[in-house]
Amino acid sequence: MSKPETEDALLTAVSENLPTNLHLTVKRSSNNGDYDGLAILTVGRDQTFDFKIEIKSIHRKENLFLLKKAWHDDATDQRLLICPHLTAAQAEICEELRLNFIDAAGNASIVTKGLFLRISGKKPVKSLTNSDNSAARISEGTLKLLLVLLNDEQAINATYRELSAAAGISLGMVSKAFEYLESQRYYRKSKSGRRLLSPESLTALWLREYAVMIRPKLKRLNLVAPTNWQDLTLKPNEIWGGEAAAALLTEGYLYPETLMLFTHTPLQQRRKELGMLPQQHGGLQMTGAFWGETLKLTLRSQAMLSIAELLASRDSRNLEVARMINDKYLGLTDSALFRD
Image (cartoon, rainbow, N blue to C red; front, side):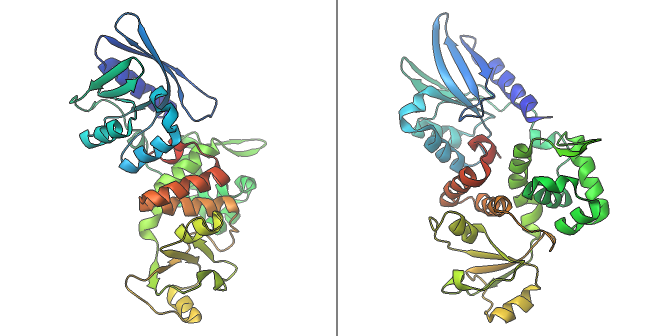
């Protein structure tokens, strides 16, 4: 099921589960602005209230704090979050932050001029389809190929052998990855060549799935962090990740607490070359690069690697920096970037 279809199902559930004296009319927007559409909430027979809506899943409280910042204090009462069922704790945070919301079960908290509305205690809607489970989950190999395809838009028409080397996967996996992308309508092949559809959606998908499909399998070696990490001489195939990359991409806005260095060199060999000491909870994580040695990472893919780690950390400071890097290098909407 595509994202628009899932959002339509959510909007339907919201409308069906509101009390009979409330009616929500939504007009979806395709302007790629900072909201997903406009809504009119009718109370009783003739009272109407206008809102800009954001359709979003909320699984972490950090998403709510970031949403508050995105909405700006002076316009919060004109905004409305439409989401799957919120827990009681999440709903309480919304109330404290004055974030207007209606969830799929029909629970709501709306405070705006002329209206104070609170509905609570309604149970989750079991019939609402979760988009993450509506199709086969993307594989590790497909994610590795996606990094190559999103790194350079010209890569889509490279040979399978070239893509295999760049992604660090087998030729058979390249074929399976394209089959998956085609089945999910992310890829099309024509006489004029291959075409990747909806790269923005694929980028958001890659950022979400990295934490589940790639990150847990990375080989890591914890080392004593160097005093001046930026003075290290890196090999041509090495790159900083996570907070260290964020510090570079934001020109020092973030001071990294944990360093992450991707390398294709065997970890123990590279440790000895650098003369570093292992430490159980060391401040430097030397990490095996999961892409092929022939891939030259662009700023876009470097930003993706950094953002994926920042999002996976679930640290509120890192989430804010992830947004800054996204705004500069990727341009995804907040609803795409922070969607769970």
